[in-house]
Length: 209
Length: 142
Image 1 (tube, rainbow over the protein chains, first blue to last red):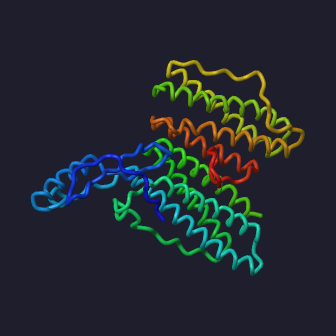
Image 2: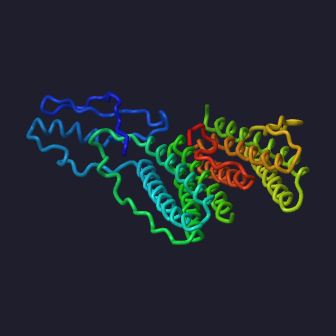
Image 3: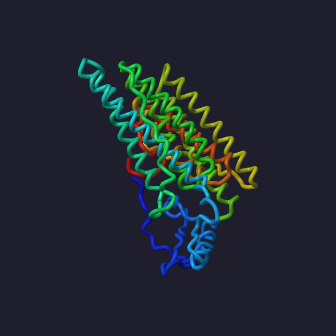
């Protein structure tokens, strides 16, 4: 669930039907959060739309489509989607290994996978906290393209292979994507990447035991 | 703080951790043998190379790299191979933390270096038996 902004908006920009348009202006570095805030173009569009509304209520559409989301918001949303997929993959692995363990498999490996599953849930929680969406903002543009976790192989070795490959890929992707985001988010992404890289070692050690 | 001074400060923090790790691995190796000693020796070299690279970066920014301390207070008293492995894991996690501020600089090259160094140190910590953490280097609950 995406957190919505509850800060008081601070800048009024025109009116329409007696109701003031208010633009959210937030320090993007505060608390390391990314706030989806209207761009200057949107601000101008809203001002113009207010005037147009007085003349005939043509509204914002008269100025063309609303600009896309900032690149760092898109990056963060992609990281959230990837972490959701990772959490789903680990949930599938825990379920599969539960069945394998019941049939005499390695319970220590299941414990490690369960613990790492919890760490990925923590990653996801922190990433989601960094994305603040004002009510009825560009939220509708986010959240598309979520992927389903791949089916887990029947063997412990197969599960190990899928999870280690996913951890490798996730760490590499974050290391590339953190180059273009604000500092606090880059630090979080670097920490998550470091955690994921270490997961490979921990998984392989448990898988061998 | 200017952009250059932020870079230098972050580089000095990372350098201090690499100095400490280089010192620590000298102790660690003395308590190991066989395959573990080979791994420790390789890790020691990696930290010395990182130390030298950071010193060059600081010099290139017109600052003076801080020298190593004559000795360091170790977080673990090392009397056995198990202690040595624990010290190695602790030192590596300190290195992870020391690079976090360097990730915050805007320079993409330094940010990449810092993120990669965090990953490598986190992997070494896990290999030495350090427990898995959700947010190595950050004060966040996992």
